[in-house]
Image 1 (spheres, rainbow, N blue to C red):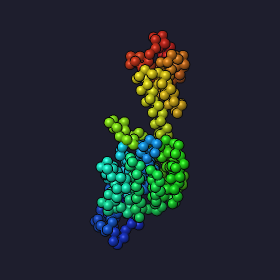
Image 2: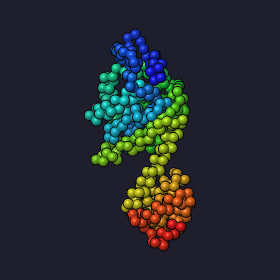
Image 3: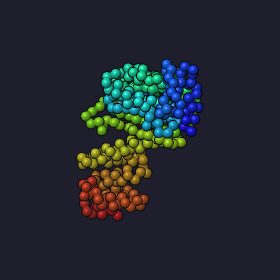
Length: 341
C-alpha cells in the first residue's frame, strides 16, 4: 500500500532524464534525482521565525501527515531552527543546525544542504539562525500549490495547498500580531494558513517548538522553551492552542513552586492564582492555590477551597496531611485540622 501511494504521488515528477526511486525498483539518477524511499511525505505549511525582542527562535507546523513533529521541525538554543518538508530530508534538520553552529549563516547552510542533495527539486526547507538571518527554498517540483514568503526574521512556506494564498495569509497574520509573545504569534500564522484553505488533503498533526536565542551554561533550561506536539487529531491547531494555554498555566505553577521553595508565600499565591485563572477547573491548580492561601494565614478561605477539592478526589486530603513534614504547609496543628475537615 505504501509503495502504491509513493508511486501515485511520485508520477508527476518522473521524466525521461530524471527518475525518482520507488521502493522495490532500481534507482536511476539524472542531474537532479528525486526523493528517496525513506523520505517522509510531509507536505505541509510551516513557519520559522526569530523574535526581534527576545531573540528566541521558533518553528511551527501543521500537516495532513502523522506525527509531523518527528520529521519537519528542528531547533537548538543559540543556533537556529529548521523546517524541512515536502519530500522531507530529515538530515537537513541535524546537518543544518551543525552548519549554523560551525559559523555559517542561514543562507550558507541552506546552500550547502541543497548542493549535496539530489532531491532538491522536491524539497522545501527554511532556516532561521540566531543572528536573525533567514533562508528558504521551494523546489520547482513541489506539489502545487507551493510557495513561500520571506520577511524580516521569518519565513513561511507551504506545499500541496488547496490554493496559492496560504503563504501570504501566514505572513500577514505574523506581521499583524507583533504584540503577541512568539509562540502565540507563530500559532496565529498557522491558524491563518488553515483559514486560507490549508493542506488540500486536510489536517492531522501539528507542532510548536521554541528555543532560546542565546545558549547558556544550563542547556537543560535552553531547549525547549516550548515543545508541543499533536501527533494525530481531527483539529490539530485547536488542540495545539489548548496545549499552549496549558503550558502557560504550568509556567505559573512552576513559578509558584519556586516561590514556595524560597518561602515567598505571597508570590507563590499570586503565581498559583494566575494558573488557576487559566484553568479554573483543574484540581491541581486549585489545590496549590489553596495551600498558598493557608501559608499566608488565610486558613478559612483555604479550607473552603479544599473541601470542594476533597469532594471530587479524597486523595488530595491525604496529600495535605503529608505536606507539613515536607515543609510545604506551615500551619499550626489546629489549623491543619481545619484544613483536613
